Image 1 (cartoon, one colour):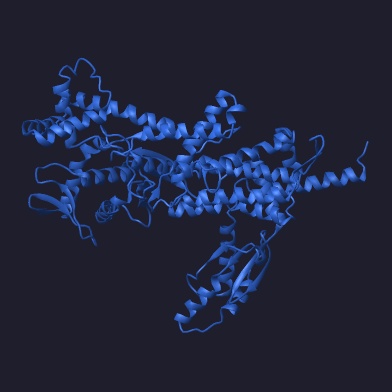
Image 2 (cartoon, rainbow, N blue to C red; image 1 turned 90 degrees about the vertical axis):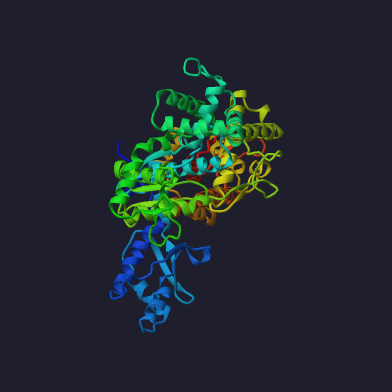
Length: 615
């Protein structure tokens, strides 16, 4: 039996919709980048003699002027003026507008003010991109070439407690790794722990005195911090102990088995403590401490000497890099090596043995001068060309207490990281009970929500601040469920995820809707949300360039508030006021809910925050 006219028309429409969708790439399009390609071509066509013409395309801040804006005309007029040509920017804009090639994206353009080109996007194409996102999941834009990235982060010192400075490095470094991994890079996560040097002589000498049978019986060192303080006190006041500590350093550096055993024991106790923190924060990292590079340092010094780059200075061997006022000390007057030598050896290994294309060091900003010297010396000796290989220090500010002073305990001690995380767990449980979540969640769900809120809030509070600045640590602020906080975003995400469940729509129905329903973007709030969702790739591109993760947090908060505006203005599910039964479901708006949840989930994943199904 043949189709009715209506069925035939419907089948044709669906077929046409599916054909259009198959032409769409599986990966998310970076709209800004695509517009730059379009305007770049138009500028070259309109002004073929103008080399390196400035190209500026940004999202429009006011919706009434369109969706994006090309601001190149004014900068081009300035460029021409410097060459003796006086041209009105508006005329430049008109010539660019005339040369815009045929494309899939632009509905129309308008020239405004002194020469802004306002761009209106095609709603049908934006709708297709959203369907594509739902069909294929949140896929990053294609990577032109697979590159290897090394991120050096966390980096605590053996025998010392991890403190809030390590917390910042750990959280920021992990999130950078997650970003690069999502974008398709090969990522090596390195923990450059301080596991070598003078302090180990002091610790081993103290170990010998306190646990003389340590070679045969494992010493019960419970509090390594106290053990370190005891040994440091002896080192500072007891000259005989100090001499023996230096002898122990020599024995350790000559790889004496008894001293290596003592060193390993101390390292293992520290590692167990570090791992507790890493388990809480879900951190995957490979330890490659200073000791790993010890045997490479001699060769590094010889390489600098062979090229005539080493100077003697009161018994020290120093290296001056071009444009730097301070030298690197590669060999001390006693013949020992320094952090400078160790970091040069590590950088050389990462460039030549690991063959990294990008190397990022995530440490506090106080170390920026040190890294500047190391990078300059590595370029001087010809290890890498900064135009080809990206080597960068991603510095960060200090953590302040609510008194706006450096974050410490009341007694003035450094805050232990595990104490901080435990306090976060306690406070998040108090918050959940205050909201009476313990009455509706199972004990297992409550524990998951507690961990999600506690660790998510600590991470987000850090990542949502520009890392370059100092930031104030406040549990009250980070656990507030209003404003740009993890608590607000986690609750918002849980609510969005529950919309389909409350409307009794299962996964199969939603999947079918993705394949058959066009996402209509007629209402202002639908259009605003659709555009906001599709800005995700350009946000990631920006972070890739400047490594400032607060941009992703700002975007996530903007997306959540834009969704709220949409949900308040556009019904997704209509219910009977008397019975509460679902009367009507708007399927394309349900799909917008799903797309929002998918992008938010990916943002959470990059920020290493774990949302839970119920909160």
